Length: 417
Image (tube, rainbow, N blue to C red; front, top):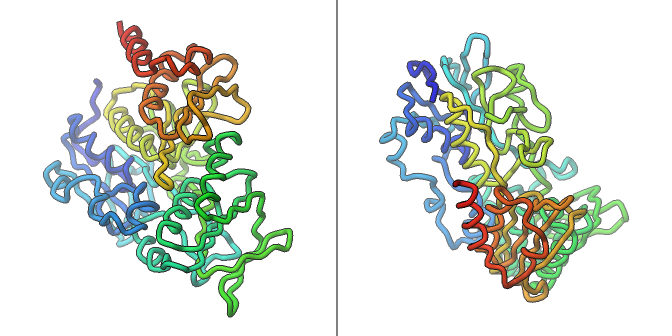
């Protein structure tokens, strides 16, 4: 591996999983210079997926979400600086400035700035309206989820659906509004998404799809949310979960190319040599299917952070991983691998109605994705097959008698020999 100078500063902006993993990987891969990990949040790096589930429910203390034990950063000689914000980057002078006025030189720079909740302008800043993106958002929202309280969730993506399920588990009366025809529409094709519509309704959620929210108003009876058709819903608490906006402002001011995220190549290098980006904010090439992609999943951010760090040190290995994510709602485990789309050819293993099945997706004869409900082992196997055996046909994969784990292991072994 070709090494960089190893005498200056390596600075990582963002203390989420991508940034934290990158900082630790830089050190474990042999970088001997100063490593500075800077983040706006006051907390040490932590896992965000539990926020909308166990932490919000109150069954997991926040301390258990930490990525590493507190002493790790000092032991690894990583200078962790929380509660600080980078306000300017000079890519010509290779310096950055913090909100307190301090300026730092860098040899290597990684943006892992993640994203922010997409605001709903008609409800922005209104009392009783909440968003959930960081640990600091949890306590106030959890306090509102009292038994019998009325909770309205705007947005039925992963965060919205998980918050709705959590609110129901705490005895709240829950209404969920979604602009698309089905919940989880960015992840699931309609046939599978319909399963989750039924799941939420069977647990008492009042789910409305195809809703164009036009207003939120505080009245004596509560917060009234209205849509373009003149319908209205009254709640004590409103949760806005309509997606994420990548945090590109700092990179954009530095003259780095952005377009739905920070544009990077297959090595996570930006348009400015020596400056990299990874995680939710990185818009990267899809080396398997072509085009570009920006992935907002925890597992992908972790993998990207490690790969970006190695490439920062001169590894120059193109990144090509099959994305994977999961969700737990009402005790039902959902896992998604690859890039399933509504227009793909779909085959099913198991029984959809029994909430125990795997949907397998082919596009132009190529295996491109899989969705599993309560079939985690199969999704792990199919993720490997998407990467190593995309020609595996639907007849073989749809047959419940086919052991996907054995097939994936033999395929990987063959690919490696």
